[in-house]
Length: 232
Figure (cartoon, rainbow, N blue to C red):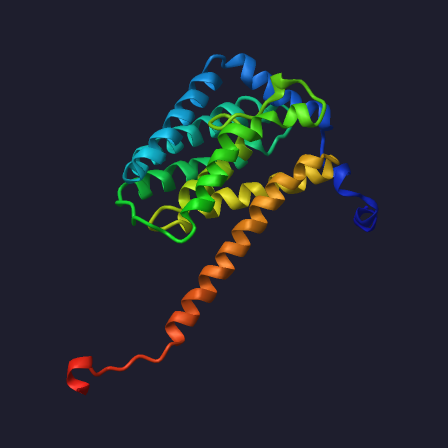
């Protein structure tokens, strides 16, 4: 029996197909309506407010925390669990995301950060563009993935928001783990939308590499222990 495992492909390990997977989003949107619309409006307002008042990022982090709890319970436990027995375990990632957001909200914004504009772009994508993927893929808009209820846009938005915080890694870590799982799931299902979590992970890797490289170069610069006034 064990010797036959090599004959299995990744698709054989999934107990559902693309239609069942996308139907989960439609079911969640309809069952909890108008919550998806309320969360979307709240995020649009938060994004506008963040543009006007960057120092109020902590309040947007609180919204992210609420959204992550909604994703964990409504999407994973109540909806995705119907086709994937491991969904309730995956919900833990978003409960961790919620706790990380609350943790970061306790610290003031560091002001200008190197990648804040990139983070803002990711947040804009998650709120405004990601929901239109069903139309691109020829599916019903009823299956739209909305930030605050669907995991992928919430995770992408979390990473974007994290790039303007003091300790971004605590927020990026659980979001990146989910995006890796999502990328594998969508790739196995043969969905072109797999490019979204893959691109988000690639961008995270590039930013992390550039940040570490920049710190190493900064630490490698020779510094004199003697104050300039004493050298004159």
